[in-house]
Amino acid sequence: MKSLFLSISLFTCTLLSAQTQGTLSFSFTQTAHTSYTGNKNVLAVWIQSSTGTFVKTRLRYAGGGTADHLPTWAVNSGGSSSNCIAANCNKVGATTGATLTNFSTRSFTWDGTDASGNLVADGTYKVTIQSTWNHGSSSTTTKSYSFTKGAAADVQTPADDANFTGISLAWNPSGAGVVETSNDIIVSIHPNPSENGIFTVEFNYAIRISAQDLAGEEVYTEDVKMNEVSKTVDLSNLTNGVYFICVDNGKGLSKHKVVINK
Image (cartoon, rainbow, N blue to C red):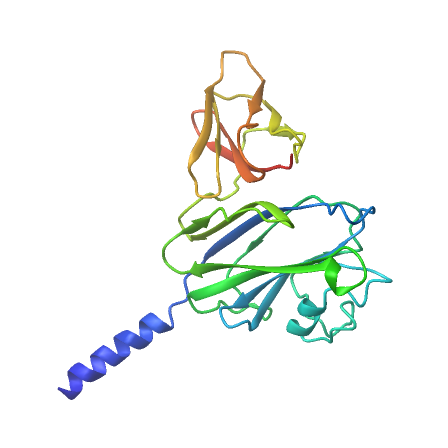
């Protein structure tokens, strides 16, 4: 009986401490605010545990004159609410920059690690976005999106709201979903991002062009005719977000991340 109890306990502990490798891909579009005539804004996006414990910052855009903005992120990342550009705000591994000059599509990936580079345990996590576009609490919004990090894929398209639209969330464990690749196929894609969902794809040789969403589902396909070296890929029927255009030459597949930002 003791041996059985010990075996069950060890099995339970193994499940609780699972640390699946994978990639979270997240994309969203910021919405301009009618009550605000300018375009400047600051933004932070970070990963939290289900209980709100800080894990890792992925995006942080702020500059001089905006230190009192992004108070929730500043506190959660180890700083104070009055200074979001202080050195003690943890932004290790994040994409950072000065104050943004437009409301646009933003995207990032997360490899399942914390700010120290350690792979975190499987479980429920949150992507939290904080955006500030003017002084005063009424000009700041904070929104969280929960997902499950684990051995199964978690793909979501959360509903739009007054601040964020075109939201795409996909946790794909290693071996699942779409991974951006490149090989001997020479590929050029423009414009990227696209403001209407239409891309020009140029290549040295191909037999087929396709597109996939973050879950790896094919959303577009077209055969390439003999001697063609470019194609117009029309994804205008799709929502804003991140997709992958795939160029197949019969011997290999080249996958390239593109962004639709209508």
